[in-house]
Length: 419
Image 1 (cartoon, rainbow, N blue to C red):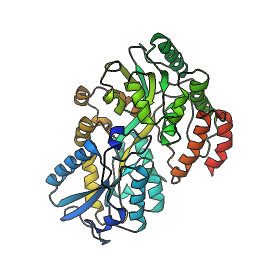
Image 2: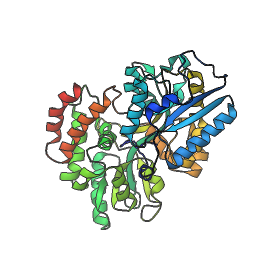
Image 3: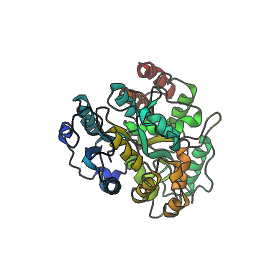
């Protein structure tokens, strides 16, 4: 799948070479340009665009093979686009702006639907009567624009707080306890290099790391109102983790989730902020069997914190094959198929009903993932989110580099983010 920083992608997958299909070439594949709707029962070919890498791409193909066997009249052609998020988005946009009816159905990052919906590129799903109540509501919110659904949750990636259970016997219940537990662990175990590892580089992951902490202080990442006491308190906590409490090194200003992962699974960090995939990689001493994964603990007036990452499925507004495309989405997001994907790839299901004792027996950490999914917050659902993201990255990097205080950075950047 494509690597959107801060979305919880396995770093190993990012290194896999993928031959990207030129986006404009999609128009020649599968579907015709006819605007007349084609019934799901008719013989047809639809194009599914994704950025599947490694086992994720293989599992998508396995699921689609089963779908085609159950629906022999529908052939699905998979177009594997770039693993780079910027290139992937550009490929989709090139097809949409050209008015191409393909891809008929496609994978979307949780931050894309509002942009696509405002541009008129994706189908309003209201007429298809989707039952979105079966999914985790925060990811449903990420695919909703102006009150209408435009994308269906495929799988979730809630970011949370990892901790070493051999060093920290009970999970912390407040931000202050995270600090004291980290400081104590650093004194107890000289092999630790830091008490806390988190993504502090100037990229999307810094936003999700902040968002994981934000609601614990009563903050909310609303572009129209960034300058709030809760947001300032959350950013101050992260700043002080580096420069006052010294549980995080200044090196975090260059760390992305891959470096954070390595620090934790190598046994160098007592705590880290990261995604569910890290637990499946914690397979050697000293972290094996000694890993806890929780929402960031709430302070007074706050709620437990987690940032939403994940992927969604949407339908091209120009396709004549919306009925077949919808049938494919329903299949890929069914409980049985989501569980099979989770067992093979580690992608957390978007359906609460998919979190069963059978899944836990194969991967117990999914119990923690379900808890985090109950608290995960989406990034701003905004058609201009990429611009908002750039401004937020500037704000955060100023604070993490200690060139501005949290209060000063939020005060100076809030007006720019609002516009």
